[in-house]
Length: 427
Ligand code: S3P
Image 1 (tube, rainbow, N blue to C red):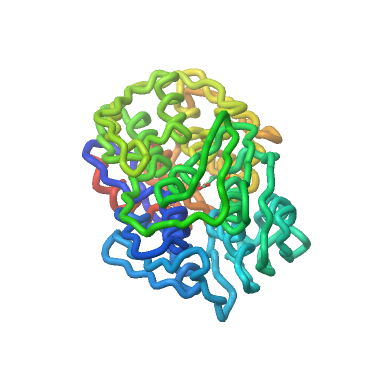
Image 2: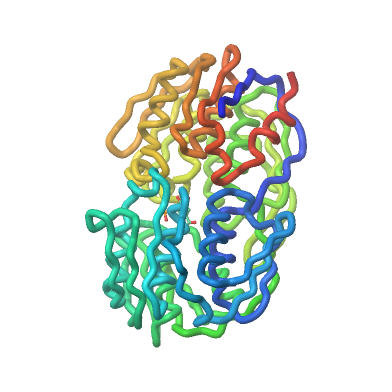
């Protein structure tokens, strides 16, 4: 699909976004292992979270959907059935890496594969700890999907994550659900903690002290109702749009503001953004609030170390903001960007060239001078949802009509993106 975007006058409106992708995956997987019915409200409408639902169904669990409410009939920790075909994770790294931990603890063998992009993403990071737990997993060339998982008895481990990855942390904790005794995960940097919160809400015994997570195996998880907050990573596109287009004023409703994700707001505030959190409440252990953004020129700055890890999904759209900022933006320690749905350093740089924006690519990041002019261009998403949306936002500031090729990629996390963007733009 080719999406045309005209430069916009000020953006204004109240925005309701789909449910958080990270949280939706976790709720669905945990609910499928809980005893009894779970109702997940405001479940993500994205394709990735539907890949997770399909996998759960293929494992013999009853799943039904009505609007954005997903009902899952869990049958307890040993309720999954051997699937009669390979599981399809689609484009979703979270689905394959997190499910790998759960599949490793089953009394049956299974296979899980994904699309062309997922087939190139590294799985060694989950295979190594799962092997230490006693799992036998085969992968293409020893590290890429598809994964053949020989399920069996797992033992608990004490594992120090070599990379700050919430997917890997989750995979180990999920394996630990099936191991007798205490599984310990130690994090070099704090990564998103939705798994810890969700497991606790469903009844697991899990403690967190200074980046050390300790969980007792074989918990009794109970089905329940859970509300998914709106996705802060999707909100990021509108926050940046509001900061790029003079005169804009947007309110984004009921957004997840978990402190392991909200570094985005702190960073934007630190560079001069006009952002306010209007109300904040705790829902199922996750803070939720409305965010108001008004146009303001921003200074730019440096994203490095822990901040890079905390902002990793938002870097493509922050790079766009960086090019318009006063002082430009330097991004370091972002090697992980090279192994996302695309090599996001390369795909950002490619699209920047198309719009005449100067960028210096470094092995672990990029340097983007500020105060640059945005030319209208033909962008390509390269099949990556966050690249499609980041350059749609860039196009709002273009000097003419732009196009995003392969725009349908946005549906991976945010199918309503184009419609909502269109409804906010005043011409
Ligand atoms: C996610 C963790 C991050 C993030 C991804 C979702 C999660 O990946 O980039 O979009 O839900 O745990 P890593 O765990 O690879 O850092």
